[in-house]
Length: 143
Image (cartoon, rainbow, N blue to C red; front, side, top):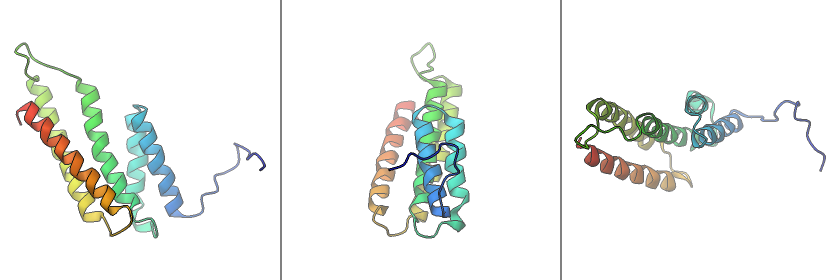
């Protein structure tokens, strides 16, 4: 098999393929801690919703990944900021509450976007697990 020239343009032919690439890059950059770049790629997938024809799972998956990104970003930013009493700092608590509300809204969006596909059950179970984790975090923060 010949080696492809790295300078050659990508041979992605459809919006679905472009969106798949952006989804994977968004997840990759989030995992690497490059949150701004991750958000750019994931939001690109969501913005292409009208163009995506076959891979209808891409947009709800990107929205789920954005919810995960929101939570990971605030967790990294705030770390374990606690007051002298061992409780989370009030400002950190407010930021967590705002981020959790955004993430829960995104998870609601995922549920409304999911179409009956092979991956829909898997995505719904991931949404349920993330909702459970958010519930535990809210309890730990006293929200």
